[in-house]
Length: 125
Length: 107
Image 1 (cartoon, each protein chain N blue to C red):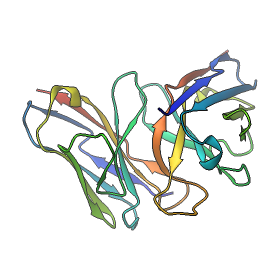
Image 2 (cartoon, chains in turn green, orange):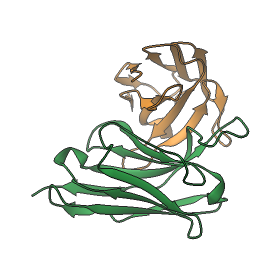
Image 3 (cartoon, rainbow over the protein chains, first blue to last red):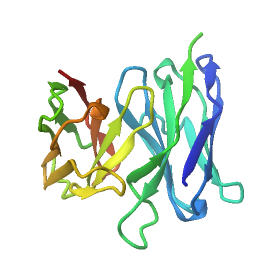
Image 4 (cartoon, one colour):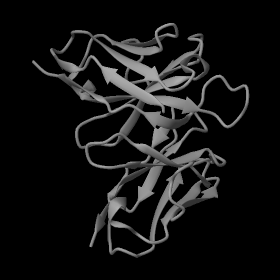
């Protein structure tokens, strides 16, 4: 069965950095684009970033562009999110999600069919 | 960015009721619309993809319809385990965007 397990969250001061990881199992990780989606406390869902199956294509939300970097290691079945210059408004639960496409050959799927349990990032002095 | 507007924001209904949530896109998104269920303290779960396709394993009381800018999500007979917040999500344009959510409670 598909499993996504995030780690790396915690409390960090504004301006500092944090790296999140998402360990994947139960599917061919190297065949799917992967996403990060976040949810601020008591708020709705916000898409953060995506990386294609081979790492060649990456896209970011404007709110994190230039500060966050998505990457993956297909040999370790692991997705990462490097978060630099963190701000209070980055406080949220961060979910990794597997992307599915119903169209053959599309390198990034935008149907979030499996999600991890989330890891909480709190940016506070 | 494409704005997704869900209504209502909250809803109280009785077990067995038919429940309908609407989602309106700020521009034509064809059928690139998904619906998710999120229970308190849990990750979202995919229920409906491409506007009307039921995800494998999801009970048939859930359904979706619509295309273009106007979409509907329906629970045909509300069950106690359906208490959750429901979100629509478009993926016609980058960035993918979510509705603000509809919190469903039992009356």
